[in-house]
Image (cartoon, rainbow, N blue to C red; front, side, top):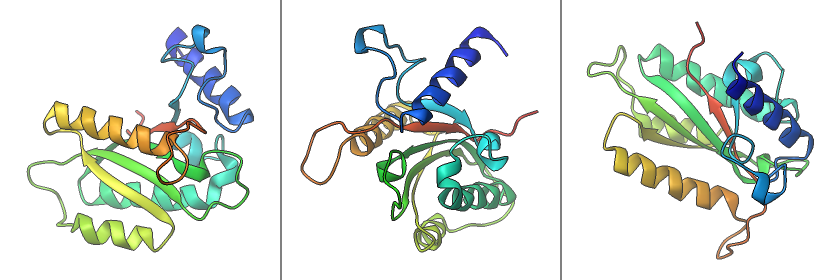
Length: 172
């Protein structure tokens, strides 16, 4: 594990202890490595090493990622936000943006709109964003969902919690 990975892991674990605030150190001492979004890996979720309090909701995310992989679509990362990332005892759903790459010819035809609806019924409020398109649109989408997930309630701009960014790439 290199030095950057150590900082990311330490920051994630500290943030998890504190229910994912935007910063775990004073703001002026914060960097992209030790502040929101906190980076973890989906395999750590899969094996019960992180985000244990949200195990049920995250099992649905794991199923979605696995289904996309079976269709030949490559999930890259999942940005998690909303009330499931924080101290709320029983959040109603998991807000998630899943960034993916699509091969020219997917292995299996999949209707992504129906895919999202099926998972919404399972309490996964999933948005799918292609990462292999226009980089400006990818940055814009990331900025939009970051702002949406950091703030509380409709028509409010108060930052109330941090975010989690799960690396969904398969580990070698």
